[in-house]
Image (cartoon, rainbow, N blue to C red; front, top):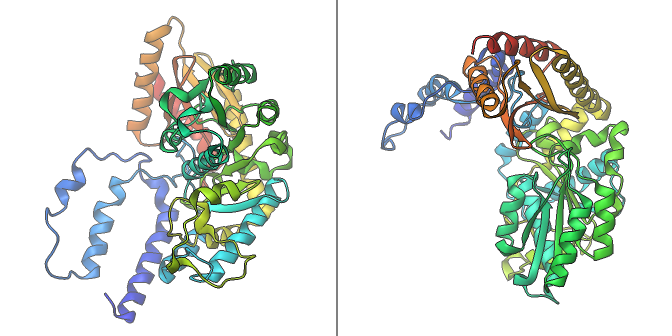
Length: 464
């Protein structure tokens, strides 16, 4: 379809469908009710030889795709962490898709490069991060954290062979951290999972002990990754205490605040950054809780030179005559190709305003507190952790149920809740026991959705 008139007509049709979806998504089951193989059975086994009309393609989309999707923008999506969006973010993505720019160099997309620089300055100020740091937009916290590990490895590589470098994180860290350590080349027998305390936060004394033992064994401690807002419970590793250890031991410290980082725009939560002066890098995802659709991860570095030395390759076809003051973001990430992600941040921050963003995040945190109070006061229910910002964990605990039987009961309850379709929750584990997570953060979620979810949970629980 190359005719501009046809494109204009179908583009309006798509825009109408998106607007309708925003208004009607609440009517879908939150988690897809599809069965394995449903879509495969509906799709031809071979590609068409002749062109098909866009009318037919869009009709098939409407019939086949929404029923086969879990609806992350549903106001009763309380699973995982949010991956929220908003109308201004979607509009920006439409524009970037239309321009289809490859933003690998300043020369290939000057506006994209300079917009990224300014948006990272805006975020740095909004979050209260130290001045003088350099920011870059990555695809995900997974990618940013991997880049931090590469920077840490590069810093030590001049004096130590890679197979003698040790890496440390908590046993509650996201799986992407452990995966990244493997990709970065840390030997499996040098990757340490540090114990956590009763609040699921890394124990500083356990970290210090592990570092001391590794030095005694002839290893070089190279990198520590801590988490502000763990995936399981939203726990906060003690940044200041661990930072002091890293500074004393000359170990690279990366802070993974993928989800919780958005809450730092609230002045009352800036305390979570106490000790950030010890960190070497920091990441959070606007695509989780700042109403900017995936993918958009904000990565800040105290001194980017270690990362640039690790990743910079400069063949003749990438050389240009740009001003030396220009930052070439291709040297800050794994991929040479880069999308124009900064545009959607510009749209979102301007459309909501800083105070509008704060208002929505504050509401999510307050509704989580209210729900935690309801669960804590309810007979036959146990609040296990939190509230940690907008995340709690809990379980159904009627009298007489314990141990493995209690775990099995909550597995059945979780399955029944998700099969019901009115809300979507996910499981977790605390001290080896099964819990149910409840995470609030979708753009369209209102207090009524949280209260309705609690009523639904109680109604379903008595039927299992």
